[in-house]
Amino acid sequence: MDCDVKDMDLVEKGRARIEWAEQEMRVLAQIRERFDKEKPLQGIRIGACLHVTTETANLIRTLVAGGADVALCASNPLSTQDDAAAALCEDDDVRVYAIKGEDNETYYRHINAVADFHPHLTMDDGCDLVALLHKERKEQLPELIGGTEETTTGVIRLRAMAADGALAYPIVAVNDADTKHLFDNRFGTGQSTIDGIIRATNLLLAGRAFVVCGYGQCGRGVASRARGLGARVIITEVDPLRALEAVMEGYEAMPGREAARVGDVFVTVTGDVNVLTREHFELMKDGAVLANSGHFDSEIDKAALSELSTNVRRIREFVDEYRLADGRRLNLLGEGRLVNLAAAEGHPAAVMDMSFANQALSVEWVVQNQKGLEPKVYGVPEEIDREVARLKLAAMGVEIDTLTDEQASYLTSWEHGT
Image (cartoon, rainbow, N blue to C red):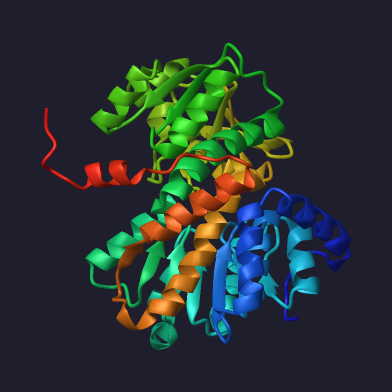
């Protein structure tokens, strides 16, 4: 196939690691079995801009089983697992354009290669492919019947496009499915972010002041896991409801400037820009660790950090030490990109199982309903969300109750009172 990957000698390693992830992705396996029989995506070209990992490989294989032709590029320059990319190219007739550590020029060349495939559907993680098509390749927009978006940052961008009247085709916000954001964002981001920080630094978190910037679902997960390892967790927020919830959960909440003075480790998970800036760097302790788990590397102001520094050196594989004029050292992990994918392996396969099940079923739903869809952002249909939850429980061997006829009737009536 037409691929641009790091090393095809990594195929065998990639095969084994994809198989390992598959063992934890039992919902997706059930969908793949049905897709293989029914071929609901026959004749559909899918352009995917996703983190190229072993879990993503199992999603792509499910789409291929359903009859789709797929071209795949990375949604982040540091998130690719090169062995998984090689195995997909070799084994699955998938066009793969992804190399871990690719520069910005290569990153966008790869996205354009996926656009050259002239997809009918886009599958995005961060909205870069969708944005490129709308900005630079508008002549292709009539070819597109729909798409899906995986992450919070991408959904924010898509809703802004829709509000501006710029969105040209319907896109399903997979991130907003309960079986995605309540599990992937919280349990996946929580565990994988801590994993990335520890792999990069080998720090003991117990007893350290651990600052989480943003208390959405991702922030909740990171805070929970940091507290579980014995850290003193501090939350910074701009939303009073989320800040109040954090306090009620037993965390400290304070402004960023105050947190900057006391924090040992800082993690941004807001989906916004310039969350940690010069004013914070000037107050931080010597040796403070800075990490980002939001989609883009815009949450930590790297330009300001560089301006303050007299020397920058790579002190560990994923740790850049910025030495300030007064001698203090601030340590940036994974170049300010997604630390869980830059320095570790991303979310565990068991949680990505639900997220990617939503992706696969949402693509099928778009294909089936394309004629009635408008160019706007859609939520994942409730029946898909519930089906993913049902399949996940079944895969885990968990049984639950069902309503009796009497209970179901009671919940839909208004006559019963005190």
